[in-house]
Amino acid sequence: MPERRKLKRHHLIFYLRVFIQETNELIGFVVDISQEGLLIVSEIPFESGKIYKLQMSLSPEEGNKMSLHFTAECRWSRIAANPDLHEAGFLLLDFRPLDFTLIDDLIDEIGFRE
Image 1: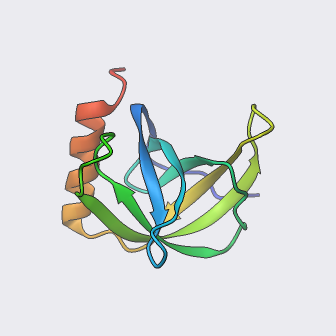
Image 2: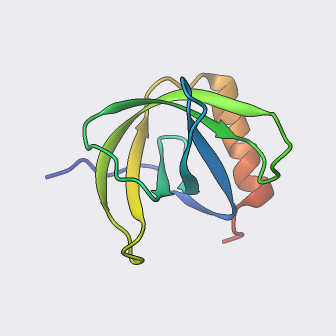
């Protein structure tokens, strides 16, 4: 049985862009996030069990250059409700304490109030 997350994920009002670090290729958008992981929606499928080096824009605005670099493992991947899209759950592997603070600030700024 797959391991379940321990922390509650927060759905975002604005989707943050995610890129492959090496190529700067846009691969999808973060739709929910926690300090342990994130859910990405993409036009491309992800490989479960694969480690990805990613970069996440910290603003929904195109011109903002502030981003977070991290490594994440794809834990699962499936076709989304829209069959043209894929969704994948990622476990964050190398976040630093400052990264967690940035994630908390993001949740406060652009997450749904629950």
